[in-house]
Length: 232
Image 1: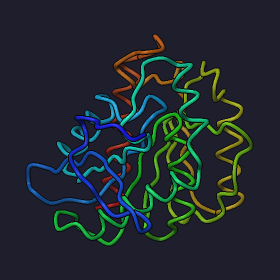
Image 2: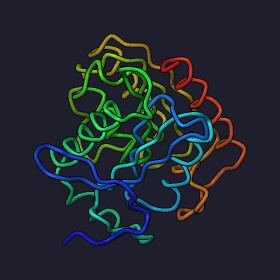
Image 3: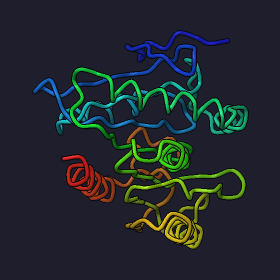
């Protein structure tokens, strides 16, 4: 059953129903839209903070709550929550978030960006493939696919990836395979960045003990520059 998450501050239509999420707007009041896709922990303070950081950089950031209000700091429970999330449901909520941003008065432009972490780093690529020309920049932080990498031929935008050289969930060889598959299937540019760090090195809540501040800052600067160049 869906629970109330105090981080939720927006409701938006999604495939005939409603979805919840967190929306942050920039000080200027308007800016390009960016969908932020959560890790397997849920819509946590960290994801809210990512939205706030993007807003401070001039973007309108929306993070859909894919777990219906549930969050956890236990990796076993997080894995179960991720496994129980139908890809179709997640894609529907994420597509609804794209449409909500494109229709939002604060959002400039007719395309959005998307940034995802861990589970969300995989979903961000699925979203870019499903939404096609609506997404003009996709950023995957240590993206995870539980099984085989899905068909990503629908991606039409440049992709930027951030992966750790010591990541056991998505090792460098798998990250390179993912990047090459996107190039082969979609024919788009893929910028793959590897860091001397482990999985979730950007997450300063540090649940896995892998937070790497210097690498996180570098990845963030690259992300903001990439989004700014693509979304104007």
